[in-house]
Structures are given as C-alpha cells and as structure tokens.
Image (cartoon, rainbow, N blue to C red):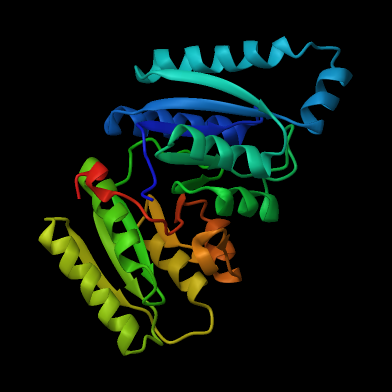
Length: 280
C-alpha cells in the first residue's frame, strides 16, 4: 500500500534552543512548500518530572506550545498547530507521522539540555521510526532555505527514492544538487549515480558531479566537501531491513548526521510511496 502524505511538517519539541531552531527552519520551509507546521510534545517521564519539580500543571505544556505556535505564525505567516501525546518519544513520533500522513519531520538534536535527550542514539531511534523523511538540525541557524544540497552516493540501493526527494526540494527552493560519489565505487554504484544525474537533468534540476578521493573516511570527505560548498543540506538514505519494518543507520550515517559543521541532514527511509503527490 502506498504511504499517504498530507501537507504537514511535524516538529517534535522539548522546548530546548535546538528544537526552537528546528521549528523556525520548519516554518520557513512550510511557507515555501505551502504546508502547515505541527508542533508535538510527547509527555513522558522527563516531562512529568519537570512539571513536578517546577510545581506546574500539565496544562502549562499546552500553554507553552500555544505561545511558540503564535510566535511562529506571526513571524513566518504560516499555519502552526500543536498536539501532545503521552508515551515514548521513540514510538509516539513515528505513530503521529503514520496516523496523520506527515510529509516531513524536523528534528532538533542536541546534548543533554532540555527535557528530553534527543541526542546520539536517541535521535537515531526517532529518525529510523519515521516513514517520512526527517531533517535533523543542530543549533546552527539556516534562514535562507536550501540552495546547495549534497547527495552522497555509496551504493546502488534506493537511488530513485532519494533522487525524487532531491528533485522535489530542489525545485521548491531553486537549489543545486551536488552528486558526490564515493571513490571506491563499483560499476553498480557508478551506474546508480548516472541514473541520478539523468533524472535530475530530465527534471531540469541544476546539478554538479564529483568523485571523492579513495579514502577510508568517506563521511569526513562528505562533510569537508559540503562545508567547502557552504551547503545548506546533506541528503542520505537509510538502509531498509527485511520487509521495510524498520530502518538501519550505520556509523557512516551517524557521522554525517551529527557533523561538526552542523549542516542539516535529510534522512530518507525507503517506503512504498505515491510520488505523484510530489508532482513527480
């Protein structure tokens, strides 16, 4: 069955600075993509402990979300709504994505600051639980949209999924896609990169192509290349396990997601999806 998709950008928040940055980037994207922003706070043991320590009622969570939504609406002139769910951030975020047909997720990740520790393996669990592409952002603000997008190619797996999303984002933001092929590419990987280039050309998307030097540290090469371009986004694809039940991230993905240049990373989980919704 095709995955449904509605015009919703979901932003989980624990009210930390980095989640506020994620919400701001989501609101700016929503304006260009003609979508609405949905703020989500998952009430878990961390939230309950915070409320107890601060002598606050559960209603204060809604008040805080309402305040954030009002500020974003005023600043970006987009529709911003909010919901709360009770449970685990690792399951509830993915469930909301599925239940509401969310198009994109903006996930702020940080150190142990704020109510919920969306860092390291915790953030990766959220990324891999989502059927929608997840854009992982750190503290560094990006306010000009996405103009330079790096597309690392390391395998022949699922190139069309990633490329279709690249075309969609590139067209909406008038971006250039920079294909970056791993130096150790075999014939299958090289052919996949050619398919991607052909698809970008067919859809009138600006792109460049480059092959890395042979190295044992391709993630560092990707980050260094992206930094040299002043890239606004890196797009990667997770690897599906059998049956598309969950998704796997390797150390390569983690190094890129948590890059020290703090470039936002769009993580795409391969799914059966009706790409006509994107106009592709």
